[in-house]
Picture 1 (cartoon, rainbow, N blue to C red):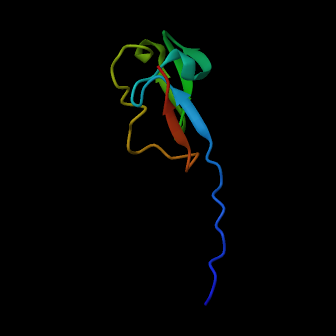
Picture 2 (tube, rainbow, N blue to C red; picture 1 turned 90 degrees about the vertical axis):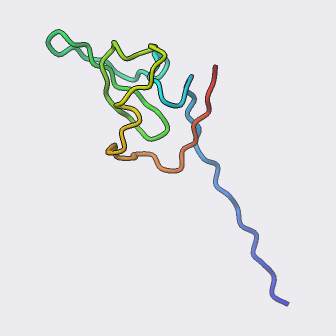
Length: 83
């Protein structure tokens, strides 16, 4: 009878964020001002994305975060929602 080889699962990296769809101050990586608009770069479970500062902590979903055209930079990363 053949024996199965034990499969070892790799630990997945975890990114913590206050919500699944909104952009929050705790996710900010970098910021830059272009003209009158202040842009921020944020990191979530899919990688980094850019949005304007007025989108942070509004309680609404950020269209730039859940955009389906975004390139996923960090596959197999889990999101842990922390309140």
